[in-house]
Image 1 (cartoon, rainbow, N blue to C red):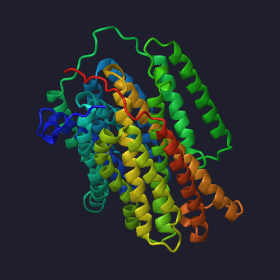
Image 2 (image 1 turned 30 degrees about the horizontal axis):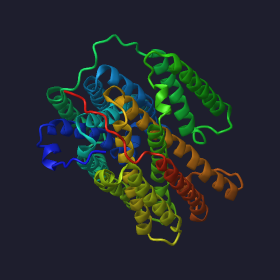
Image 3 (image 1 turned 30 degrees about the vertical axis):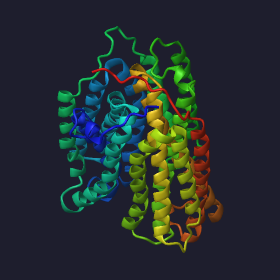
Image 4 (image 1 turned 135 degrees about the horizontal axis):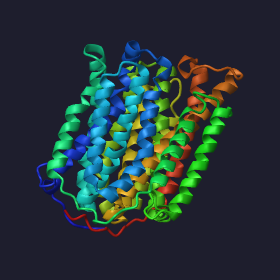
Length: 484
């Protein structure tokens, strides 16, 4: 672990590498805004295009496309370079945004969201990989503050813009607003980012592995996301989808063992630091999705708040996250990765404990406080995990490990949806004698204990997070930066 002193002026936006950092921030802003801006516009979209029963696919198809493409982009970034891959991602995202803005029906909008998701699959992991390439571990301790600010600002700007566009202009502008951001990012990256050139050798692209991962991963995430929603868990459709997914993923693992340049090299699963970082990402994704899904429902259905107040309760988590993520660099430089991440997981456990005390008579501020503390913990855990994983490998493999980490978080999100949904629905079915009802239409006496069971599940995941981070090395010899 380096002990070099870093002046913020040498790594900030006015430094020599500042334009590249700004371009990565703009690119990340595309994904960060999209995570919050669409939700507030859904009623307007449905009023205009119809397709109320189909609108959940606006989110599911995006998540599917993003998740399964991340590891593929990560490998291609190592083979072909970061610059062409992130430019491809930004281009796809902007093109998808324009098409979404002109969508004439809900099926068309869903199809164009797929294109957006394919772009997002490149932007976030390769952006993080570029940061790992051009900044040392000590410098990233400062840079994380800039990247964290993007998510913090987006957590406020996104819902606000979504509401303003929907109420006063048109919901279509929630997609058109991505165009200037994407164009600016692409121009700066193209002109100012001069990366290390990949070796001029003929590569053997692992097409079989890419197809098996894309199809198998898509089916797995589809089965987890829609099981218990679109179809019953024990239905023939669910069983068939999950069975085929498992078969394809097993086939993918076998292909990777023999491939000359595998999409996901087997050594990624054999390194302690990577296994711990990926397990951490998985649990963070699980916790994020569980809270994002059920905290607003609890606030509205049990505490009786408006949708706006419920959104602010959840936003407390997105406020705590960037604050701690920006501070985590200073801490892991002094204490090491493991102790910093243990501090984060302790905050998550504390926040989960506060969440368990929230009841039908509690204030929404208590719910928001629990989310804030959990957000602080997630920020202290997530950022060091990515930095540790990147620091443990050289330039040629940094894209792969970053992509694997992001993919783990996506799978965790899907598993969170499936697990917490099963827990809540099981409690509801037990109390209603097997009758089915939407969460939004349930009486507080039924809804409160169902979501409380979800909070218990979140507490269990928080404890597992401590176990996952305990295995990460405290100090990791840093690999050299990529030469320009």
